[in-house]
Image (tube, rainbow, N blue to C red; front, side, top):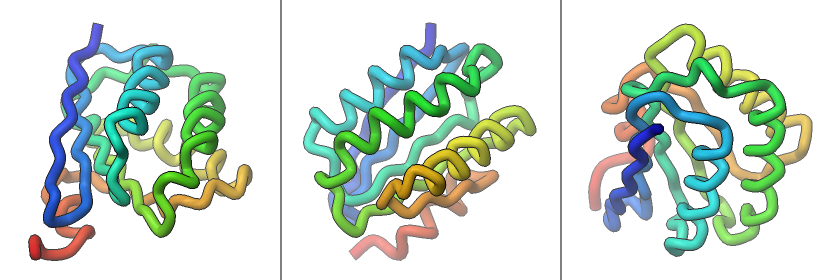
Length: 126
């Protein structure tokens, strides 16, 4: 079971979602729903650098896009950054990115190898 925490950085209109441990597709779907029910800010950083994504399937990737698409209207002009340090995680994130693009998902998506690089992509704290 994964540990999934959420922290808001108000100055960047950003929520950082940190995933640790072995995570399942169902847990990530629940986290997406929690993110939006928590009043999702414009930007999101999903940090998977301490997550084991071995059990996440390609079917789960499609489900992530489907669920996130239901709520995307709540984040006009928003951006999402994914942090993946493992090769498997990076590959799954690329699958998510391609699936989202093919579904015309309206949120900009970027994948990073480090949390700091992802945080920096949202600009300086105001």
